[in-house]
Length: 294
Image (cartoon, rainbow, N blue to C red; front, side, top):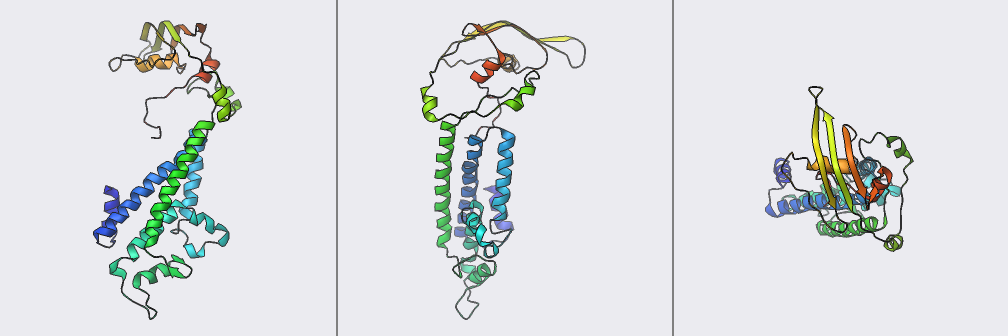
């Protein structure tokens, strides 16, 4: 809102409250719809680099056919469909219409009764069937954003429901790094996923020790000392302690995410010794970074 207000008033838009609030509405709609629309990539694409690459290409296409870089009336007919399904094109067109269909641009400048605002829009290709867009297209843009949000939400929901990916290697695990290129995407249908028998897993650990070399000397730092415990199946377990107590370090050790230092102790899954590959396939690890889509 602050950025949008600065842009509106410093860019010399019409100084009318109604047009200003419509502009803010369009700005918020654009931000929210983009968030929902691009969540499809995070739900459907396997890893972050691939998702970022796909979204980058999509943004370039959206900007190119938004009506700003290339005027709408000179876009080739075989590409015009991209313009009409383009979120940025709808938002940009609504901002233009909101500006040039306002009272300050109602002065008649042509013998056929065309106003100054209509003449400007026709000059820059914002026309439909030879006539400048009417103000109703602002509200058509609002409906378009709502519809795009609904479609994107449905697609994201279906992708999260039907697509499953095999767990890759953990960050920093040098032993299995060479096998990461051989990982393949495993996609199962909803019926197949529902037919899988869900079994609880009890994780137990005993006498866990973790030592690392100090960064400023050859001394060893004993970060975990004889830690024992268990996480029962089917129960949400909270690991609590003061800051710096070693909670994250313990979770990293149990999740096989430590590639340096020395780890000793016994970790068992349902009574069986923890095996790296199978454990990574059956478990998930969410780091304490706020990077999840709401």
